[in-house]
Image 1 (spheres, rainbow, N blue to C red):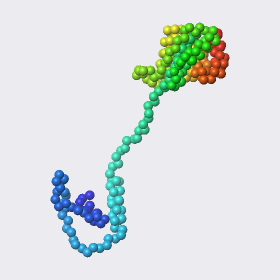
Image 2: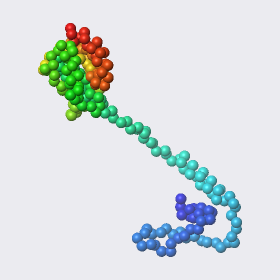
Image 3: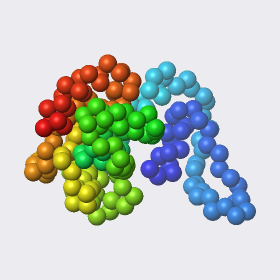
Image 4: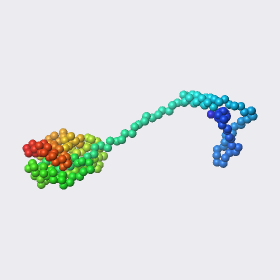
Length: 224
Protein backbone atom coordinates (compact mmCIF):
# COMPACT_ATOMS: atom_id res chain seq x y z
CA UNK A 1 0.00 0.00 0.00
CA UNK A 2 1.45 3.38 -0.97
CA UNK A 3 1.54 6.36 1.36
CA UNK A 4 -1.25 8.35 -0.37
CA UNK A 5 -3.73 5.50 -0.14
CA UNK A 6 -2.84 4.87 3.49
CA UNK A 7 -3.45 8.53 4.34
CA UNK A 8 -6.75 8.44 2.45
CA UNK A 9 -7.91 5.45 4.48
CA UNK A 10 -6.92 7.13 7.73
CA UNK A 11 -8.70 10.33 6.73
CA UNK A 12 -11.88 8.39 5.86
CA UNK A 13 -11.76 6.80 9.32
CA UNK A 14 -11.40 10.20 10.94
CA UNK A 15 -7.79 9.63 12.03
CA UNK A 16 -5.45 12.59 11.68
CA UNK A 17 -2.04 11.90 10.16
CA UNK A 18 1.04 13.56 11.61
CA UNK A 19 4.26 14.03 9.66
CA UNK A 20 7.54 15.04 11.30
CA UNK A 21 9.05 18.30 10.14
CA UNK A 22 12.62 17.05 10.48
CA UNK A 23 14.39 13.74 10.79
CA UNK A 24 14.98 12.48 14.31
CA UNK A 25 18.60 11.77 15.39
CA UNK A 26 19.58 8.17 14.73
CA UNK A 27 16.31 7.40 12.91
CA UNK A 28 15.74 6.52 9.28
CA UNK A 29 14.79 9.48 7.06
CA UNK A 30 11.04 10.03 7.12
CA UNK A 31 9.14 9.60 3.87
CA UNK A 32 7.40 12.86 3.06
CA UNK A 33 4.72 13.14 0.44
CA UNK A 34 3.48 16.40 -0.89
CA UNK A 35 -0.21 16.66 -0.04
CA UNK A 36 -2.32 19.53 -1.26
CA UNK A 37 -4.83 20.39 1.40
CA UNK A 38 -8.11 21.97 0.29
CA UNK A 39 -9.99 23.89 2.91
CA UNK A 40 -13.62 22.94 2.68
CA UNK A 41 -16.52 23.31 4.98
CA UNK A 42 -16.80 20.32 7.24
CA UNK A 43 -19.47 17.94 6.18
CA UNK A 44 -20.89 15.10 8.18
CA UNK A 45 -19.57 11.79 6.96
CA UNK A 46 -22.12 9.06 6.38
CA UNK A 47 -22.61 6.99 9.48
CA UNK A 48 -21.67 3.85 7.63
CA UNK A 49 -18.56 5.25 5.92
CA UNK A 50 -16.06 3.53 8.23
CA UNK A 51 -17.89 0.23 7.84
CA UNK A 52 -17.89 0.55 4.05
CA UNK A 53 -14.16 1.15 4.13
CA UNK A 54 -13.61 -1.83 6.41
CA UNK A 55 -15.66 -4.05 4.06
CA UNK A 56 -13.63 -2.78 1.12
CA UNK A 57 -10.38 -3.57 2.87
CA UNK A 58 -11.69 -7.02 3.86
CA UNK A 59 -12.62 -7.83 0.25
CA UNK A 60 -9.19 -6.74 -0.98
CA UNK A 61 -7.47 -8.91 1.66
CA UNK A 62 -9.56 -11.95 0.59
CA UNK A 63 -8.49 -11.38 -3.01
CA UNK A 64 -4.84 -11.19 -1.98
CA UNK A 65 -5.15 -14.42 0.04
CA UNK A 66 -6.71 -16.22 -2.92
CA UNK A 67 -3.81 -15.21 -5.17
CA UNK A 68 -0.98 -15.78 -2.70
CA UNK A 69 0.31 -19.37 -2.55
CA UNK A 70 -0.43 -21.25 0.63
CA UNK A 71 2.80 -22.40 2.31
CA UNK A 72 3.05 -26.12 2.89
CA UNK A 73 2.83 -27.14 6.49
CA UNK A 74 4.77 -30.01 8.00
CA UNK A 75 2.71 -32.79 9.58
CA UNK A 76 2.56 -32.61 13.34
CA UNK A 77 4.47 -35.43 14.91
CA UNK A 78 3.17 -36.61 18.25
CA UNK A 79 5.82 -37.17 20.86
CA UNK A 80 5.94 -40.82 21.93
CA UNK A 81 7.76 -41.59 25.12
CA UNK A 82 10.35 -44.30 24.71
CA UNK A 83 9.51 -47.58 26.39
CA UNK A 84 11.98 -48.00 29.30
CA UNK A 85 11.66 -51.79 29.09
CA UNK A 86 11.15 -54.32 31.91
CA UNK A 87 12.54 -53.69 35.38
CA UNK A 88 12.74 -56.56 37.88
CA UNK A 89 14.92 -58.32 40.46
CA UNK A 90 15.18 -62.07 41.03
CA UNK A 91 16.64 -64.16 43.84
CA UNK A 92 18.40 -67.33 42.74
CA UNK A 93 18.89 -69.61 45.74
CA UNK A 94 20.72 -72.93 45.60
CA UNK A 95 19.37 -75.06 48.41
CA UNK A 96 18.77 -78.78 48.90
CA UNK A 97 20.25 -79.58 45.51
CA UNK A 98 17.65 -77.42 43.74
CA UNK A 99 17.70 -73.91 42.31
CA UNK A 100 14.89 -71.75 43.74
CA UNK A 101 13.82 -68.75 41.62
CA UNK A 102 11.74 -66.00 43.21
CA UNK A 103 11.04 -62.44 42.06
CA UNK A 104 11.78 -59.75 44.64
CA UNK A 105 8.82 -57.38 45.19
CA UNK A 106 9.63 -53.76 44.32
CA UNK A 107 11.44 -52.06 47.17
CA UNK A 108 12.12 -55.27 49.16
CA UNK A 109 15.35 -56.91 50.23
CA UNK A 110 15.68 -60.55 51.24
CA UNK A 111 16.38 -60.92 54.95
CA UNK A 112 16.88 -63.67 57.50
CA UNK A 113 13.18 -64.62 57.47
CA UNK A 114 13.39 -65.40 53.76
CA UNK A 115 16.40 -67.70 54.24
CA UNK A 116 14.78 -69.37 57.25
CA UNK A 117 11.65 -70.14 55.22
CA UNK A 118 13.60 -71.86 52.44
CA UNK A 119 15.63 -73.70 55.04
CA UNK A 120 12.42 -74.97 56.66
CA UNK A 121 11.04 -76.10 53.29
CA UNK A 122 14.20 -78.07 52.54
CA UNK A 123 14.12 -79.68 56.00
CA UNK A 124 10.47 -80.62 55.51
CA UNK A 125 11.40 -82.55 52.38
CA UNK A 126 14.49 -84.12 53.95
CA UNK A 127 16.94 -82.18 51.78
CA UNK A 128 20.33 -80.92 52.99
CA UNK A 129 20.43 -77.33 54.22
CA UNK A 130 24.19 -76.79 54.47
CA UNK A 131 24.61 -75.55 50.89
CA UNK A 132 22.20 -72.59 50.80
CA UNK A 133 23.61 -69.90 48.53
CA UNK A 134 21.64 -66.82 47.43
CA UNK A 135 22.39 -64.63 44.40
CA UNK A 136 20.45 -61.64 43.13
CA UNK A 137 19.81 -60.78 39.46
CA UNK A 138 18.78 -57.20 38.66
CA UNK A 139 17.44 -56.08 35.29
CA UNK A 140 18.37 -53.93 33.51
CA UNK A 141 22.00 -54.69 34.19
CA UNK A 142 24.55 -51.91 34.49
CA UNK A 143 25.48 -51.96 30.80
CA UNK A 144 22.83 -53.04 28.26
CA UNK A 145 24.25 -51.26 25.21
CA UNK A 146 24.86 -54.53 23.38
CA UNK A 147 21.86 -56.49 24.68
CA UNK A 148 19.37 -53.63 24.63
CA UNK A 149 16.52 -53.33 27.13
CA UNK A 150 13.63 -55.00 25.37
CA UNK A 151 11.47 -57.81 26.72
CA UNK A 152 13.39 -60.35 24.65
CA UNK A 153 16.72 -58.93 25.84
CA UNK A 154 15.56 -59.40 29.44
CA UNK A 155 14.62 -63.03 28.73
CA UNK A 156 17.98 -63.69 27.06
CA UNK A 157 19.87 -61.98 29.87
CA UNK A 158 18.19 -63.95 32.64
CA UNK A 159 18.43 -67.23 30.70
CA UNK A 160 22.18 -66.65 30.36
CA UNK A 161 22.40 -66.00 34.10
CA UNK A 162 20.59 -69.28 34.89
CA UNK A 163 22.65 -71.34 32.47
CA UNK A 164 25.84 -70.05 34.04
CA UNK A 165 24.68 -71.14 37.52
CA UNK A 166 23.53 -74.55 36.29
CA UNK A 167 26.82 -75.21 34.52
CA UNK A 168 28.85 -74.12 37.53
CA UNK A 169 26.87 -76.18 40.05
CA UNK A 170 24.44 -78.74 38.55
CA UNK A 171 21.19 -79.22 40.48
CA UNK A 172 18.28 -81.65 40.43
CA UNK A 173 15.96 -79.02 38.95
CA UNK A 174 14.47 -75.56 39.25
CA UNK A 175 11.69 -74.49 41.60
CA UNK A 176 9.75 -71.44 40.42
CA UNK A 177 8.27 -69.56 43.36
CA UNK A 178 5.33 -67.65 41.94
CA UNK A 179 7.07 -66.77 38.66
CA UNK A 180 6.00 -69.61 36.34
CA UNK A 181 4.30 -67.11 34.02
CA UNK A 182 6.86 -64.31 34.35
CA UNK A 183 7.65 -62.65 31.02
CA UNK A 184 11.39 -62.73 31.74
CA UNK A 185 11.51 -66.53 32.28
CA UNK A 186 12.01 -68.61 29.12
CA UNK A 187 10.93 -72.13 30.06
CA UNK A 188 11.63 -73.46 26.55
CA UNK A 189 15.29 -72.44 26.81
CA UNK A 190 15.66 -74.80 29.81
CA UNK A 191 13.52 -77.66 28.52
CA UNK A 192 16.11 -80.29 29.52
CA UNK A 193 15.90 -79.22 33.19
CA UNK A 194 13.23 -80.45 35.62
CA UNK A 195 11.05 -77.45 36.46
CA UNK A 196 8.34 -77.27 39.10
CA UNK A 197 6.45 -74.34 40.57
CA UNK A 198 4.45 -73.15 43.55
CA UNK A 199 3.48 -69.92 45.32
CA UNK A 200 6.04 -67.23 46.04
CA UNK A 201 8.05 -67.38 49.25
CA UNK A 202 7.14 -63.73 49.80
CA UNK A 203 3.47 -64.73 49.70
CA UNK A 204 4.08 -67.51 52.22
CA UNK A 205 5.74 -65.03 54.59
CA UNK A 206 2.68 -62.77 54.43
CA UNK A 207 0.12 -65.59 54.38
CA UNK A 208 1.40 -68.63 56.32
CA UNK A 209 -1.65 -70.67 55.29
CA UNK A 210 -0.15 -70.88 51.78
CA UNK A 211 2.61 -73.18 53.09
CA UNK A 212 0.19 -76.11 52.92
CA UNK A 213 -0.47 -75.35 49.24
CA UNK A 214 3.28 -75.22 48.59
CA UNK A 215 3.72 -78.58 50.33
CA UNK A 216 1.11 -80.23 48.14
CA UNK A 217 2.46 -78.74 44.90
CA UNK A 218 6.13 -79.55 45.63
CA UNK A 219 5.78 -82.93 47.33
CA UNK A 220 5.71 -85.05 44.17
CA UNK A 221 8.65 -83.30 42.49
CA UNK A 222 11.00 -82.85 45.43
CA UNK A 223 10.48 -86.28 46.98
CA UNK A 224 10.85 -88.28 43.75
